[in-house]
Image 1 (cartoon, rainbow, N blue to C red):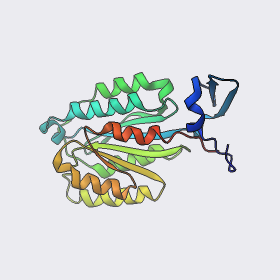
Image 2: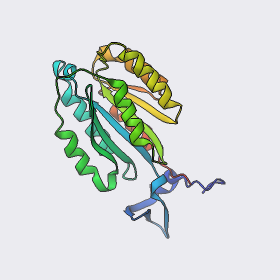
Image 3: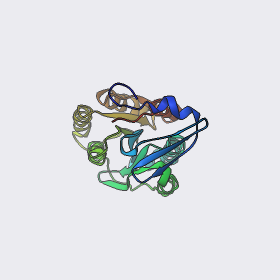
Image 4: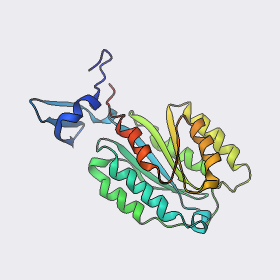
Length: 220
């Protein structure tokens, strides 16, 4: 623990054999001596993954790439992280609220695998707002990962999305964007910068995952 009572789990988890979620605590079993525990509600990262299922995703034939990126993220995050899944077109659909990967990884993977496109328009800013809403009660690091082609076709949609990203970032929520097409890069990069995050190409998810794997800690 540091002077503020924060346990730097990144330093201690490297030597563990296994850890389990039990009730309100993570029980960490070390490969050397001793057992420690920390309040699990404040541990790791909380991440909402927003997946674009609008008509342009179908037109550009990138849904499978989106699903693969989301699955890669789910498969490689730490078990103490919490993840929620939202799909969106011009409506948001909550497939899963925040759940611990230790408990629900397979369920989340099944939800992602069953995603289909809808053929409707796109409202990115409403998806960002839903992500913010789902993160409201968590005490751990708050993050949104937006996977999209960036084609916000509603009039004024880009402006609304930029304003929403800026507002969300003021609440200590980081926005990371993953672009499925070249045309997405400029707009999605803007959103990531406004959201104090980073933009990634669809084939760069390992670089995104590495940001979270190096950020494992628990707050008091």
